[in-house]
Length: 354
Ligand SMILES: [Mg+2]
Image (cartoon, rainbow, N blue to C red; front, side, top):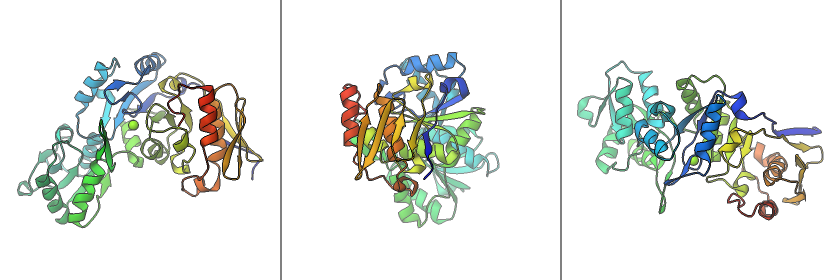
């Protein structure tokens, strides 16, 4: 084993080294109906330092104007052009393959209709309109008839683009079927899988979004390891995990290599701060600033809590995420509870200490 492995690299404030941050929405900018505290200020401060925030969402149901209006209601200064939806990415894939004006069967909602029209394609709802391809994305009013028409198109061999494959969408009452579940329904009747997927974690998602934004040094930012951070790695782009959404200490410390973040921050203020490096030293101990965490008998042992709960978590990442399971693409089987307890002891209000 090498003496020293850098697990989370040191970084100057991301706002000083990147031109565009590709931000996820739910769990990053807002949680349900409410803004994440401090998000609007962080976006404004980043913009003042030359970092443009662009919002990349897997949700294909709302057109960019509606997402933009929602952001502005939350006090975030965003233009509609700062929003990239998976519907737009899906329409972009089709526009690259079909002549202008081609009819495309839509299995989905308003977001897809608008995105196709914006790319010069003609959305249709029936096989009788001789579509040249089929596109499927989430829409809250999507019904059986549209799914059945989609299956017919798929059986007929039309090129099939899915906006994304998320199995669930969050609702105030818990998870509900997402586009991935509806794609599975069409696949069951159609006898095959989509030919292309537009959204995260596909490698093309952040690449296409960065190209749309004209970015040369993009940073991907999200709260979900299996979409945002996996998508960042797939795209070959640095990824910042923020702890304001679905991922807490326990999920992060089980993260397989394919979804490992480069940077970890509490919230979007992490765009404005320097990040210390976290390293694994020769004896398997993870270190960051003054914090040190060792692995013993598949448990994590906090040897030095350090001065900052986030550095403690970074040190734990350096210890846990270099275990062989992570590189093998599996979840790391390590008990994160001592780290959770130590973070909580230092920062009792941290919701991510779970
Ligand atoms: Mg999210």
